[in-house]
Image (cartoon, one colour):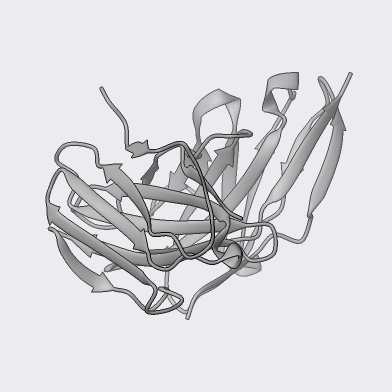
Length: 114
Length: 113
């Protein structure tokens, strides 16, 4: 039973570059969440989708961040242009429907912006 | 709005000793409560959850947690820790009908021989 799959696992790039993080949810899960984890701010919810539709993007820090879910099997989080303060671990998590089902996390993408 | 407080940033326990990690929540109605564990370089793994019913909840890896409404607490316990339990532990609270979770700041657990 495959879990949430994120790619890449590590990304190092220079500031100003576009960064795209990818997530493949668990099959059948209706909810998809993007989180950012840093030492200073802990785990922050950026945006979440239900049935491919964005429900709450109030956690997206700036217009440089965007997320899409073109179908039930794939989501992307894009940062353009990237800045050093975007360095963090980004997690994708998914959950089933039916009332507050637990969220299942991927192993994250460790992003370093130089 | 709901909130979660994990008052202990770092706890050190001897292998074989008992463990209790504290979690206090703030929410006006009956909350949905979760404990997750994060090992280095990995995502969060669900240990246990409380939705309703029996206030003592059993989870994986020998962990349990007790929901105490009067104290707004959901503390995690384990009778005897193993070196492999060294990790970061997160408590989270959710509201009925809202899939968003609010996470605590985490407690880092160190196990000494």
